[in-house]
View (cartoon, rainbow, N blue to C red):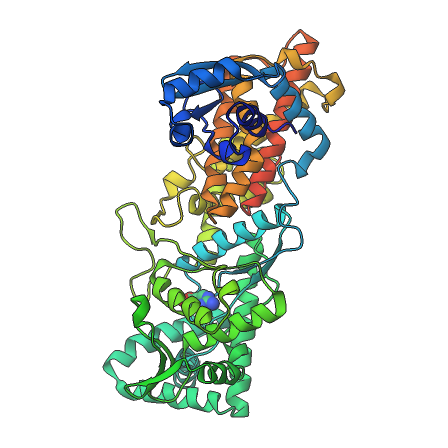
Length: 569
Ligand code: ARG
């Protein structure tokens, strides 16, 4: 595909004798296309060229050699060069590239040979998998697919919270109240009920806490029966999560969680000791981080036990050895900001700066209702992820039954649309913001939602079907695509790969999500203004091909976010 930015930068480099790569980075996309397809801010060169920006702009315009196949015209506006690209070249290069690559359009080999380790989801076993974990699962899942699409080898790690006092609590609770719950028929729900009840009753009854501690101690000491119970709880919890993961299309290459590192911490503690990094503080062993304006990173507590950070260091070393990663991403809530800063700093101090600098914490905000109240915060009233997904599916089923009761494969479509709506809602705003969870908003087929994009995609499908024609690039008369609405849509399709790269650079799937809304809206404007099925075959074929290209990009994009496309709605 022709790289317009590079071509423009090279042409400017020739006149200015400046570095083409720098110039390419200065190029901007103006907010409205009357100001050109690209704009070059000449004030960026004022220092190097020792001239006023408007003068630089005029000089460049006077002397630049332009290839008319690439650049149509250049306007000088103040210190800016407004550059208009050749639209016919754009139409051709984009559509031919789509024809060549189809569902691979937008992918690249950028990351070939590089491993990106993505730590995401990581629910705490025996505790509820609540809506807070949805965010990590969905954001991490999207990054997993995005990096793969860019040629990286994504490694998805579900660092399960499968060790800790919560097991003591659940086991003690089961011993006490087993008969009061329906363990026979619904073990998972019963475990969670017991866990929630235990937390409530323990507030009034400290004896219960003691019981839980004793049982957890037994587990730590490897008492066979307790270990077997732990294994069982872990297993059925995982089976249960698997149902949610399947609905969300989440993929993990490893489920090594906290328990896996339990007996693998000594080497790290020893290494810290040997490197002179451990020091005693109030009975605990810590890495002093005062110099870096951080509280110390605790490695061994005053009770002599290892802790969350110790395990994260052990797992990091394991990830270095196993994957020799190019990037290690942690998709974990914002409240763990400090923890990751401390762990990454400690890794650096241990002498692994090359790896430490490629560790990134990818934080995200809370999930709140439309009044801003945190969802799932009230004790005993947690919202479970699986229930939410099923509720979404049911709601979409109701909508279908009301609007299109004859639709085939209703269940399948309701699943794709319902789950898609939840995923898209999670990814459509920058991740650090709190996610607003509001059924009316996220299921609004006319809003900036997943269902809206799916609806536009289904429109593209039905247009092609109506024409009874699978488009072939040889039938396209490129000059028939010249309307501003067609060009705007093609410009967006042209940007697809850049958008994906940008989303990966910033670990921000919302960049892709917003793009898919823009593309859907742009295409919608096009077909509202211009008939696609028309008398003139030339025009029809060309417009149909554009329709096909839009559908292809929407489908690829939506799948990168972890959603699925329905073919009908
Ligand atoms: N289980 C933890 C939680 O729910 C998240 C673990 C994140 N990953 C990590 N390597 N620390 O809070």
